[in-house]
Image (cartoon, rainbow, N blue to C red; front, top):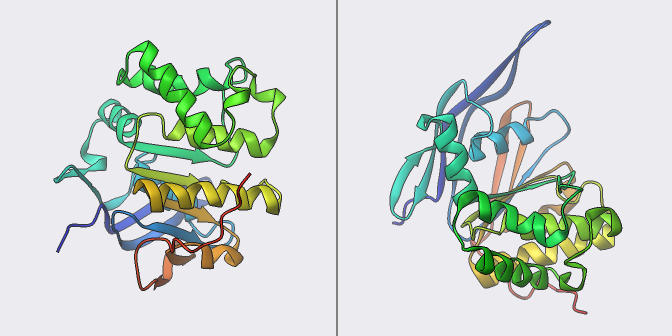
Length: 248
């Protein structure tokens, strides 16, 4: 049996506030296999984003362990130093945010080459060529030299996905990536994610408050009050390739 790509063991997170301790996650046990498109679904304040931040190592956990299989080697995410963790995340995990977080003074292609330059994974010419390939993947190559302010919100989110793919990570984590988009644009973003899973073998973990999206994931997990309420496995961990895709 192949090891899980991501495994959370008894993960808990408690925040100290002026009003007292707030328990955001309670004893989370979760395994995610390579090639899954997993949706973490829950209301605001349920613990979705905190769970995602445990997986990507952005936030420290209070107890438990997060293990990622990296080329057959098990890595405990939170046992790394903060600097080592940031470097590892930049090289191995793509992160997509609801607010896009593109740098406004950089062109689209510069926003995508930046992670490659920081990780020093590609030579300058190679990074530019790869950035153009990624813009083509999200159908925005003709806008490569525009600033983010001159494209729509949906287009900015597609650029953010391209940036998350810059260093060819095996894992993408996405925090409400369709939350601020209209339904048609959100559908296009899902098309991109489904292509990445079925055609490129990526593993995607996405959080959303919209329970209506559950059918679009290969596995849906409900979270409420910091606890996993259920885990609905599909018969097959891959996204069904018959899912409708919108073409140009």
